[in-house]
Amino acid sequence: MTTEERSHRTRTPEPTASARSDDPAGRRRDLKAAAAGVLLVAVAIVAGWVIQAGDGSLQVHWPPLLASWDPHFGPGTPLAAAVAVTVVAYGPRCAARLPWRGLLLTCWAGSVGWILGLALIEGWYRGIERRLTTKHEYLRVIDRFDDIGAALRGFTDHIVIGSPDNWPAHVAGHPPGATLTFVGLDRAGLGGGGWAGMWCIVLGGSAAVAVMVALRALTGEHLARRAAPFLVLAPFAVWTGTSADGYFAAVAAWSVALLALAATRTARHPSAAALGSGLLFGLTCYLSYGLTLVVALMAAVLVQARTARPLGPLVLGALVAPVAFTLAGFNWWEAYHLLVERYYQGAGGTRPYSYWVWANLACTTLAAGLATVAGLRRAVASAPATLRGLRSGTETAAQRLAILTLAALLALAVADLSGMSKAETERIWQPFVVWLMPAAALLPDVGRRGWLAAQAAVALLVNHLLWTGW
Figure 1 (tube, rainbow, N blue to C red):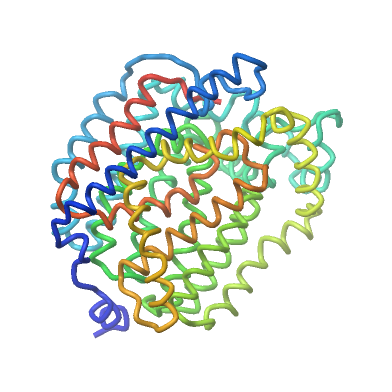
Figure 2 (spheres, rainbow, N blue to C red):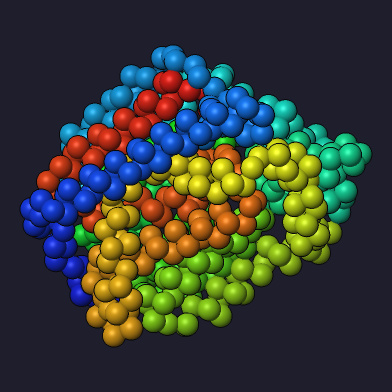
């Protein structure tokens, strides 16, 4: 028997109490939590319309989302609807019965199909090919990276508005690792918005698989399987197919998943897994400045596993990207401080913190879905017992899952309070929201398909009623 088999034989838990029992009081509280989420979104919409109509300071057309009212159907409508119906009808049964590796592949395929279907509601050109080629996006500057060394050395010279040939918004707003990804695709013969869009969609779909891998290592297979259908039908897939943030989410998610395998020693070569985790985490920090907060999830993994053994190879791997970029002439800290200046030169300096500090949470509600909100209620309610169990080493599988979701909530809270995330969080926060989704696994079997249908309905309504492009 392999180390992995022994580990999962001992760690696979019995079904959680919430899954086994028909607890009417608990289900009523779940519905109340979902209703509170709906109310939060409604208040954010109404207040947003009032503020935007008054002084235009929100700088979004359909607050709290960066979107425009545009009811429509498209060629992706049948595909998205078919994926939704299939997952709602058969997802829970397949998740329980498929072999583990088959389940991972099925979830990846389902997630990619869901993202692709939603994106194609706008059509191929408008929904995929055009997305990363608009005036704000990465593909606008590919020709300025003919000499990559020179571009990196001079990257910070073009961040602030008013500097010569200042970068487009998304290029300036991220470290150059993001742009270099698309430069690399172009040089490999995969240039243009179509290839770039499919890169983000296919890799973005793998984030669900990464979360399942981490859950299996940390909580056992039962909860990972229960989370699978909810990860596939994630409402934030609306934005995974329209931006590079789904790609960022996947890289970050795999860094956490590899660390979970290393910390629980369920990987065949734990040190190699920890090194890979560090490499991906280092890259993550050079894809988006805010993703340094992924360290909260990594800390949660190490705390649960009660080990510091992976730290050596993890840190070694994490240093590779910073050393490489620094030697190439890019200064991360200087660029970040210039980004803050650029942020307040633009919409960030106009958008009121007093609205967005809570309206961001309404965006997150739409991105995560009502089932996630209900599941988070259970995770938060279990927090005192979870902390006691963590101190005594007797935490349950459900409580270990709650630790992950609470770590993601902590990262979101820091990002929110920082003031550097005012609007567009339905897109920007995907790398954290994907770790909130497993909270739905805590919901009971009763009404499970209804919760899945609610998840799908949020995404389908948003994508068919609004234009969410950049």
